[in-house]
Picture: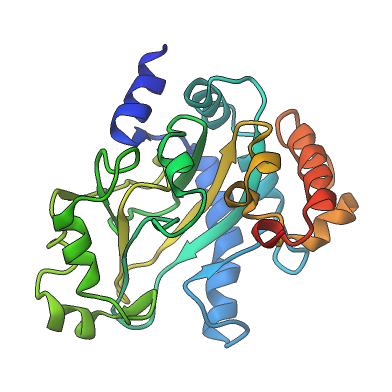
Length: 276
């Protein structure tokens, strides 16, 4: 087993420093500035743009990013396979007001796939690739492959009934140190150009600071066959309907080309994604 895969399975994440070149950063910032302008103009009101390959916002730099060799080689190492399935590409943005994305795992114990997902470390990953310095994310290292502790459950339950992304003032009434009060947590600080690859079953939370410019690319990969096996691995398939007619994307590149072909096969099999 490679050291990178061992680290990922053991801790639930690996950090790739300086993956994005200065020129790629400049192109991606130009692309995502359009998203921030659109949000300011009221075109959408959210903390992320879910489908960066939508023709309304498409920019050629997204294809360049999706063919980034360093990211793919690291993902292949972690997933222990040369080819893997593409999930989606979104952009995580900031907020006009202080907010907290409350502590969660992407799937909860009541989900029928929960135990299988805990046992699946090293078969799927998500990534956050920062275009600007980004200290939004908080995680609990090593929480991705085990049951929740009583202390973790007790802390998270203090926010039951809160919106997934809630006003920070409301959250600090529960815990003035939120999100730092979660037992065993740590803040992940990304410099511009860094990529964090992580298991979505980690406990994680995120802060949204209105005075901090944020544009962090967010997507993921999974081993082939997982989408056919369980609903939890069909995330992304219910989005990106425009990709059914992908001619507008132009040249797809050596990595994303085969991944898109596979994505479209899965989308036809499971058009409702995780709802199928």
